[in-house]
Length: 192
Image (cartoon, rainbow, N blue to C red; front, side, top):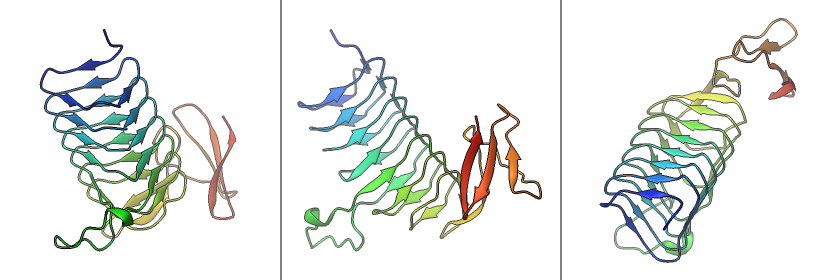
């Protein structure tokens, strides 16, 4: 008896921890020494691990591989067919497993469909990465990133809404009336 759901076509290795109410759908493979939190969802054809840590409430859409070196904090959304890399300069004829770079996705960030995340970066809390963007450097919390390579075009709220600022660099999110302010080129929550 388990506290999670795995479709009969999913394959789960030994030495894996999967939290309560997590769902693993068709043709997905969870590899050894991977930890997955509670209330997560993995769409069809996902490969996770080995040695990957995933927080609670993470939504992983179809066709995503999460490689060793990637850490995903709570409440992260990974859009369909987005891509992680794990080495900077891959070659088929050179084994570079010792060179895997750490990639960190901070709490609440969202990655759009078909985006590519180059290894070794940190994506800040609640950042929003547009579909098909290429992320090759660290992303600030709450940043809205688009393009190839990605550039910041604005800021988003915790709810994912684009923020519009007044003359004092203050924005109010229509979703929950939270207030945000740009201070030293960083977005700060000044009232939740």
